[in-house]
Image (cartoon, rainbow, N blue to C red):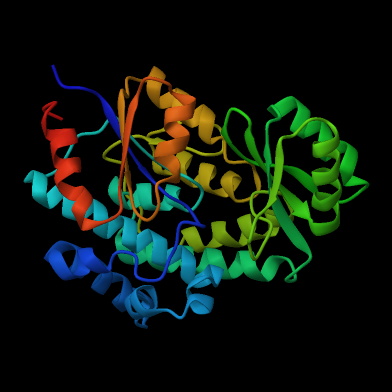
Length: 318
């Protein structure tokens, strides 16, 4: 009997200059993926990904399509080596990674998704003046405590949980001054660490609601298909099986918290026993191991990982 598994994709923050270049050089399917994105966007995104400079790659409107196409290129290489399509129970992604999951499930083409997330990144960057928003990771407090800290620190400004990643790791987002106050309160109330994040905008909070409205207008210009594999959404950690429900979840995700830990639990309760993370970094596989103890998770972000991934999936007849 085959083991149930899920495929997951990273979000913003995983980027680095040179990511995916070894896949471009070793797999035609990966090379084609980078070419599709370049053509769709009308500029050499692949050159920025492979060569930088870093200050260009970290621009949100560049970072988002860069991570998306790199993740797709990695996934396609693994599929190629396995000799065809896999049949996971679920796809999911963290924030931006949810759009990569849509490409994996056939909901959007790589070209359309690349254009959409480039627009998403530009809208997010423009929504709040640089320096006026902030995000911090709170380590060592539970959700109730973090929500209380945010409420007490807000003082009429926006400050709220943005990423619920794993037990004891919650990211907050909002106005820079309020997030700063919340960090001080969190330490006073027992947080082991407060880590300010290097981000260009305060994602997944009420300051992004105007972006959600503009993004929904963009949806109408794209061709959408029903998912071949269910998507587990960030906004409510529930399974989405239709275009309408996916679009609604993407709208909500823009300004609502990413419920990653709950999403992992949903996949486990739905029969996922093993997880494969495709794309730069290995953050999600680490989080999954903390949320779903005893479940296997691997990350694939370089060509040397491909044989391991093939063995990981093939040995169970997936």
